[in-house]
Image 1 (cartoon, rainbow, N blue to C red):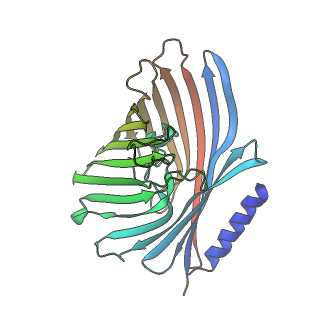
Image 2 (image 1 turned 60 degrees about the vertical axis):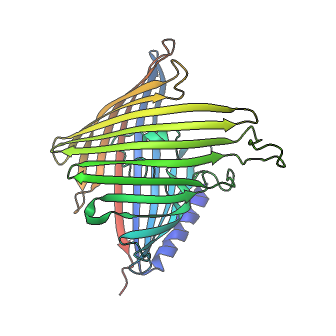
Image 3 (image 1 turned 90 degrees about the vertical axis):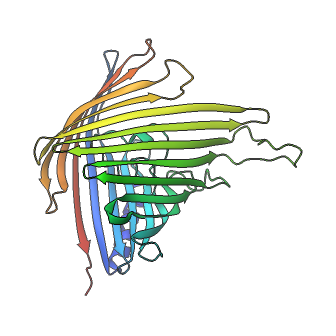
Length: 352
């Protein structure tokens, strides 16, 4: 696995050097995690939880690409795991729609906040954490900005298997998503997403029956409502997720409805120090009692260094997290996470 990682990095570096202009970026997450359940220590580890190597080549003014390799500490694959996270091209200003771009490849999933999640808290985006959608997938789509800076939109079609598999779980039916964000006044952004998704191909009888005949087939419809509010030093991100899962059998439909409510306030003390919090309510089946749990997160982000654009280069994140189960017989799980994130980027071969 280490040799594979080295080969991939050397290959993409050589690819970047051949292009007129390529941006190179690297980010590492060094994390200590201490977890307890019912008074017993269940985890006490140091690890590289995530690192990524990114290339962003430019092919002229209207075509830009992105290639990401993610790697992480792994006790199975010779100490390091690796996966491809992004591999797409953006074609800008080449469609009859103003301020739009066409994207093709292993690309962002434009659902909820997962496509612009920046890990203000250490935990994942709610859509990712609660298994609604994968953060990236193989597909193509159109995205852009609404007139007069009023917001943004995206329409895309995907394989539906995410990025962790390679042609291992692809359906005959494509998955479709639509997303819109609107900023009616400065400081307030609202929007929503809708996704249709299937899992496992359908099998239809010879015409004598019209119901789907594959008991493993699953159909999903998912909705995300998003609100962002920024007033002075206070920012609030609110999100409501709904997932309807249907398993159509010959005679009936098996339905499961899941919901998530997520609130994340951030208080900016100064340019270097942020106090962060988050509260998630997850219900995997609204028709079943005491099967969900709530998660409370409090912590801070301390920026040791920023670049010329005031973007973080080196910062510490500290989170205390408690997972509270609705089932009175289940013990709460608490975690302390301290993470050092460091980032660097450089533009190579700027051309003539």
